[in-house]
Length: 257
Image (cartoon, rainbow, N blue to C red; front, side, top):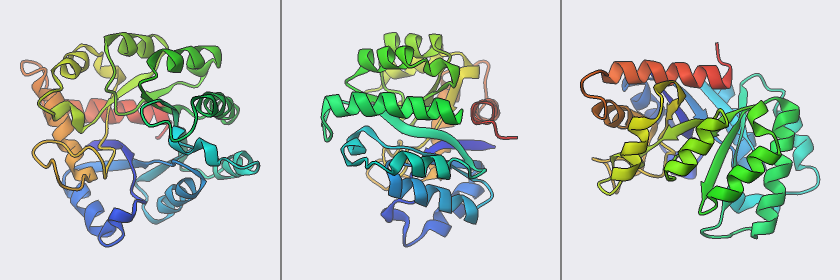
């Protein structure tokens, strides 16, 4: 059974057929979903979805694009949301210097604050990093994020970042990018990553894997990520092995029985 560890099930692109999307995923073998908060509104929506589906879990937090919108009362609201029994992670948080929708200084300051809050709440962190590898690692070290652990979601960094993340005790989560034709270097990193430190995800509705590129992504397609991972170890691993190992990893990280 598969665990899609990064979805945006609250996204408006699912408003017309969310039930059908979830049914297709369940039929494809997805046993559990983690749906992700990117600001206060989407964090609330993620938590609300967990009340409708016993197999959906939530994370809460503010994406680096959105940190300029953080208000004085947001962190207290996150503390309240974290009391919900199915909130299992804090994120996605981090740094994104590609678009700089929020200023780099705002991103760094809020990243530190959110790691501190995650440590207070004893929740593992879900890390988003783009064009900010060195600063991301520096802040994680300085804020002692290894004490709570976490995952580099949608990993697309280089071998240096992979080693740094693993040395901190973090997991690497691979998405549909792994199936892209130009992802040769990423496939080598995935192949070299210890299997007990690997998660899989769709990041749906984004980053649709081959052969569905150009369409809206959905959780059922996490099976394509598992298939791609298995193909990197053709002599030793089946898709079932990958599914079980990555699901076990997710349950361990997120403390799901």
